[in-house]
Amino acid sequence: MAATKAEDELYIRLREFMDALPGGFPSTDSGVEMKILHKLFSPEDAEMVLCMTRHPEPAAAIAERRGMPEAEAVELLDSMAARGLIGRSTEEGQPRYQAEQFAVGFYELQMKTMDREFAELAEEYFPHLGLSWARNKTGQLRIVPVASMVDVSHDVATYDRVRDLVKTKENLGLFECICSKQQRILGNECRYPLEKCLVLMEMDFYLENGFPGRKIDVEEALEFLDKSEELGLVLTTDNVQDIRVVCSCCSCCCPQLRLIKVLPKPGKYMHSNYRARIDAEKCDACGECADRCPMDAVTEGEEFMEINPDRCIGCGVCVSACPREAILFEQREDAVIPPKDWDETMERIEAERGLA
Figure (cartoon, rainbow, N blue to C red):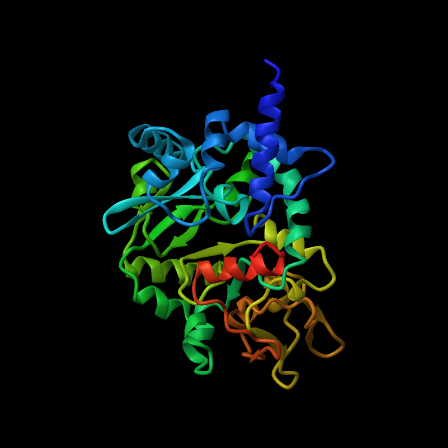
């Protein structure tokens, strides 16, 4: 059945609402972003989202704006959260609901519903979104060095010591990677595990509603980090000091890594606060580092391997792989302190986009 004019206008308002969130949701000539909204959100869902904000709120406040009984609003809000369309958290024992942007947001919450159609739509849309993100000074994500590097580098800041952060957490979980699942559905096989997203925050609601994950303890979380380093995966986190999620990313599946890898200067758009450099006196040009580098930043020189600083994202996977310990890990001259928490990250991006 063809959409009515009122429905078309509703989804246009939803797209505009999503674009006004920090992560953005820019329009395209093909209209692929509208197809995504139509696929995931019913008209009833869309109307509810338009009555929400990106900040967690009790159902009563949202119900009042929507003009419906609170019990009815709770039923719909819980259904939407269970489908990964909005966020749901708990504060003082009471549920709170918030609107989610596309990414990082409801895209990552589509583990249960990801199918061929959505995989193709997301694949088409991510390059458009990536161009939008490239204009921001503050990124939603950042890279932290692999575990062995932060254990031996005493000058590495606390917020980059991912193992130390994990040891302070009580709520830990391991979830499947939405990006890898999407690529598998598209027929692009990945040799890395599907279960590679470490969550360091409240997740009971999502586990209770069938999201593909499980609770783990600190020991298993540390083993996961060790395995990620062994496989040469890039540790990507939310751009905050008190990290909530650590994803072990590969450049064959991760949209961000795939997008920046084709650029001449990947290190400009996504990086850690560190950079690798070859010690020419120790290097025997074995090439192990080049094989491991996810950004093709390492090449063979006349006598030793060379690292292009513009391509280096400071993930450290080359350092841990070098049998001669010939790679130095140094702090970048443009190192920055990440925002304290997710709200501050969002506020910075809002200001940079002129939304605040």
